[in-house]
Amino acid sequence: MSMTDSSNPHGVPRLGSAGSLDRLPAGVARPRYDRSRLRPAIVHLGLGAFFRAHGAAYTEDVLAADATGSLDWGILGASLQRPDQRDRLAPQDGYYTLIERRPEGPEARVVGCLLGVLVAPEDPAGLVAQMAAPSTRIVSLTVTEKGYCHDPATGLLKADHPDVKHDLEHPGMPKTAPGFIVAALEARFKAGQAPFTVLTCDNLPGNGALVARLVHDMAALRDDRLAAWIAAEGAFPSTMVDRIVPAATDADIALAERLTGFYDAAPVAHEPFRQWVIEDRFAAAGRPAWESAGAQLVSDVAPFEHMKLRLLNGAHSAIAYLGVLAGLGTVREAVADPALRAFIEALWREEIVPAVPPPPGMDLGAYTAELMERFANPAIAHKTIQIAMDGSQKLPQRLLATVRERRRQGAPIGRIALVIAAWMHYLAGRDDNGGGYEIRDPMAAELMALATAGGGPIDTVRAFLDVEAIFGGDLAGDAVFASAIAGHLALLRQAGVKAAIGAAA
Image 1 (cartoon, rainbow, N blue to C red):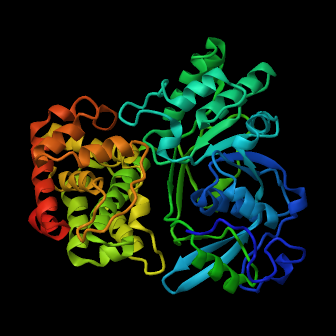
Image 2: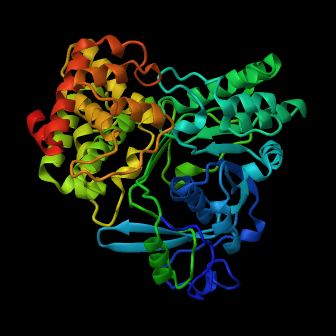
């Protein structure tokens, strides 16, 4: 993606410029509320494309439905690393275009609930102050799995992580998401104010409880009284989020201009489907009426997150690693391959669905059929290399939890073992045609060294299984699991993805 320059190369009027909303085409939805009255009450950490197409879109719908009522739910975004997002959005006053990519053609709407973007490295104390302000009622997050600075195999805070150590030594100038939350909650604690709700929207099992534990542990390393207050008064609801949002491209900028007539440096394309399941456990300051926009407020998110992590995200990882190795650049291209599509359907049917208790009212057969339709959407170009990122952080919850359950039951894990083998082979950095690609993972150096160290497949597999941060302390000693992966890895090395899939059929 080359969307780094927020300038307008064509001289087209910019979205957010004076009168631009009034000049949008009739078919483009736009904010109908009085934005000048909109007040920020949500600070969102990690302002990427997903949140802007999901949580912000739900919030926009709430505001649109109550345009003359309460306008208390504006959003301030915060980028924890780079200024790019701010630099694209600030010149257009936070407005951006959502492009719903339907098979029958795209549809655009303009979102106005984002009131500004802070850049944490430029002013960490300022971000802490905004989070700690009495007006802030919710701090939400989409910082990806690696943004929590935890061990994905154990769920524990990495106290030796360099950024965690920095935050403990410089609590007023944090770098990490847990560090910012603890610093802001400490300010509220010292001011005698109630805590805000912490609402994580990342793909982590028990994400609310996990973040509560990480925040508590970081606080306890600094002040036992603060940790006790957070444990007693804090609200950390769990969530399950679902919408396919590919990384934005220059083609999206061009499409947004064609649909709206205005230049937008920060459009977001997404699929039509969306789902948000939220544990209804918020601090006293409350929340937007997200249920009015279709969110599901429930007492227990676990069955929904279990279903989504194992079935959607697990399949996505399978498609990503097998697809990258086979030279298939997008999910839709991968599932258009009959053999790969049949493999994913068998993976669901034979190994994953039997380990997933269906949530209330859900038919898992119908759910996976709908997933395959979403994957095949010809209007969505979701890159396999994008999904393949950060596998060390994703595989424990997406696939290894299913492996453990299946092994306890003595049930087959052959197809999941092929996906794990494909991940290990992918880390060698070459596809079946000899082409190279970039490995992006917080453990990339260590894992690439294991993948390219030489030796036979079983030696490679045993070296990987000894990485406790990914496989825990139990799977290293599982000879059946190791043997299954090694058999697939040998075939991937010798004959490639098509042969390995064929042998697994």
